[in-house]
Length: 231
Image (cartoon, rainbow, N blue to C red; front, side):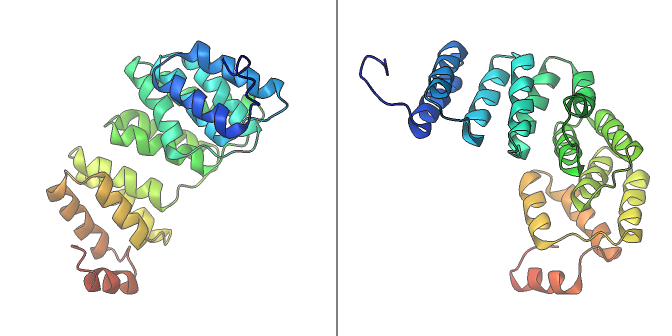
């Protein structure tokens, strides 16, 4: 249709069409537009990759979704947490959590650098889906690679343990945060609270444990009190 109307392809037009086709699961048409974009000498940008990954996850074509993830990373675009979440959700819906566990190694095999941001995204989403066993395995793999978890990784796992009734393990995670001097910022507190908004009672207990261990600075606590943010 673009050819018939003599429309010159550009990234905005092509991305809009690709995104529209991906939303309805018409990946054949999405790929046609992608090819038109490339034929015009244009390059895929982060929006193109995100739309295609989301579309392929939607239709459960995971090999294609992962190939576009690899290409996105090779093009030096950083996938967001949402992008990884689409892949994790689709694989979990196929009862293929092993594929999630293999993802870091697949990235390495493609010559890509796997840092804490990749493991963080996997752990966050697996915990959100209450797949704690798989999240633990990813954490173990990460540590085995000599990569240390950050505040988000430890906070996510500690909360998941507490929610699963494993208070002792949750306490150990928070204690390790204290030893490593990992702090919970106001931004992390607010985003985490929003993510688990329906767990008010557990959240309140969790933040009590956090404050007891001094994992929030006095300045942060003071700001929260000034903003009337519940602790």
